[in-house]
Image (cartoon, rainbow, N blue to C red; front, side, top):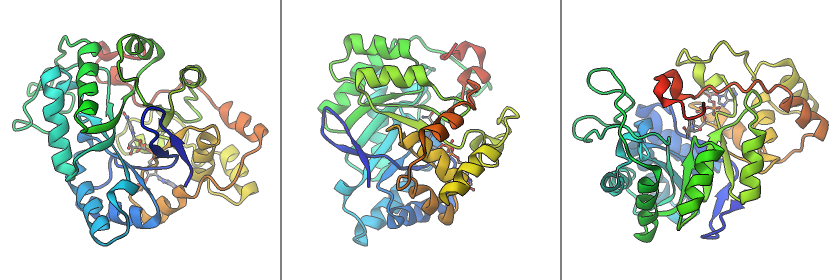
Length: 321
Ligand SMILES: NC(=O)c1ccc[n+]([C@@H]2O[C@H](COP(=O)([O-])OP(=O)(O)OC[C@H]3O[C@@H](n4cnc5c(N)ncnc54)[C@H](OP(=O)(O)O)[C@@H]3O)[C@@H](O)[C@H]2O)c1
């Protein structure tokens, strides 16, 4: 299994992991168990996905059956729902991380990310969990919590052994540079949306210079957003003639080509599938190489089309503006 070595801890993060967003809750434990059986070693979860307990059951069963040991797995969660936005205030960070670890049945995460750099008013988990974006009145309630405060709390999670590595998700260069000004523990991984309609070259180049590994999410572009009615009318990448043609030349599916376009540049991926055949197929995406011309052709599909943008929920959440 190809992996990326994380600088501070020397831990190996697999280049291909399994994404848990919208993995059906009722079958999540079995899906995770079977994903591990198929060879996945990285699981990418989040409190917001509402299935951490079930994912943890799958992990527990896989360990009990001797498929893997805990140390063979790399488990990512997102602060709050990954430090979901409502938990940014310092005191809430640790409580949330502990709750999420308890849901998974783990004593540490291998990677804990700030899901979105947005602070929302705190919601007690007993009142509503995951808290999601909206208050009881259906409105978004912002809170004034500086990122420096949240990052300090994230660093304390590392100090206490609750997280081996910490990082940022959905960040732009300006935020990353700011965090680096005060970080005692630098972000170890950045997780952002990357696919051929949103190629993000400047961000990837900045991360390369700063020597911080990047995970790209939503590798299949609009596909994940169709079921949410949020695909912004973008044409399917999985049905694109260009991607299909390149796949045919290599005897690979369009999904494998899209994943290889990322992994060949050292960008980690975390494809999600509720289908066992498709998740097996997705894991086999690093044993062939695209030509430079094919890589460039795929990159030329870029439209700077961001599918996961909180500003679509509320314009005050314009973190990418
Ligand atoms: N940090 C963040 O804010 C953030 C945001 C979004 C996602 N993520 C992470 O990234 C992961 C992946 O992103 P994503 O879930 O948005 O989408 P994705 O992996 O790009 O795409 C998933 C969609 O593609 C389909 N699919 C999967 N494999 C396929 C294949 N081989 N052939 C054809 N269709 C296939 C799936 O349907 P089936 O399930 O029916 O196969 C599903 O509709 C998430 O699960 C999550 O862990 C993080």
